[in-house]
Structure formats: C-alpha cells, structure tokens
Amino acid sequence: MTHVVTTACVDHKYQECVAVCPVEAFREAEKYLVIDPDECIDCGACIPECPVGAIYADTDLPDEQESWLDRNENEAVDLPIAEGDSPVLADS
Ligand code: SF4
Image 1 (cartoon, helix red, strand yellow):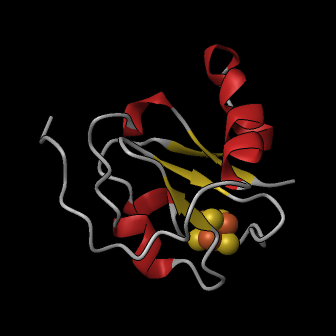
Image 2 (cartoon, rainbow, N blue to C red; image 1 turned 45 degrees about the vertical axis):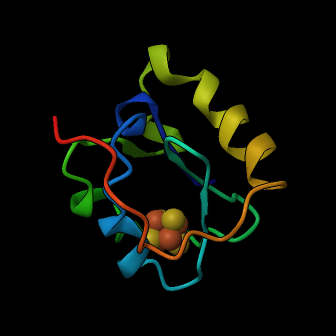
C-alpha cells in the first residue's frame, strides 16, 4: 500500500501535505508533488491537509486516477525531496 498524489495537484502544489508527513515521502516535480511509495508509511495524515483533495490511499484511488499510481512511483525516483517551501503555482 501507499498514498498517491493525483491530477488535482497539477499547477497548484499547495504543499500543506509536506509539513505533516513524518517520513519526508513527498517529492517535488516542477508543477506537482508525488509520493515515494518506498518511503510512505500510510499514516494518512496528508489526505485532509490537501486543499484540492489530490491525495488518496492507493486502495481508494478513483479509476480515472489509476495512472497516477505508476506515475508517483516512477517519477519519485528522480525527483528531490519536497521541502514545502516552493511557491504555490496558482490558486484554484
Ligand atoms: Fe507521508 Fe503519511 Fe501521506 Fe504517506 S500517508 S505521504 S507517510 S503523510
């Protein structure tokens, strides 16, 4: 099991999730965050923090967001740890 950042994060990157993650599982791409499944301990703390509801447990992932499961895993490998201090890209 892991948790997954999905399409609602794109172009926002609010990052409240980063502050509550106990294991620094978030990784930062240019326009969104992803979660490293090798780091995530499935505590669920990040889910209610996201203002746009972008984070799901993989067991609750909507069908239309399934591609984000592999995307989080594959992209996390090459991305830096999110520090939570990058500018928000755009308010919705
Ligand atoms: Fe971090 Fe917990 Fe969210 Fe996993 S579920 S990314 S460990 S806050």
